[in-house]
Image (cartoon, rainbow, N blue to C red; front, side, top):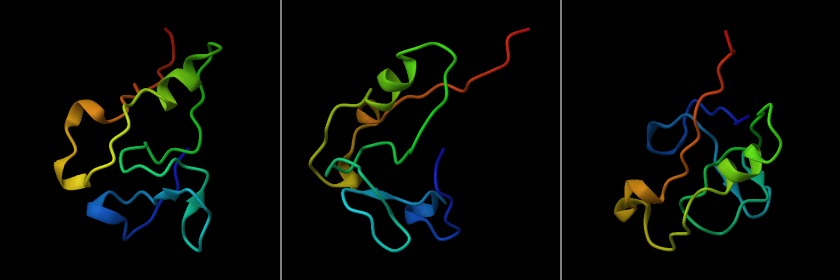
Length: 81
């Protein structure tokens, strides 16, 4: 679950989650630039949610020099056939 914003940063259309809640921003995120800006993810198996939402290495620098491998990688949940 994310918060949609028609004017999100970098054209992402996703509202940022900050350490403290503000108008138009959620709260509770770590004070780093590469957290996933996701409030919640639903997975059928226990423990997967926590693993994916914390599957990134912290980056203190600028978003402009953020390497792709430091982004959280969260797969799509699909219906089993």
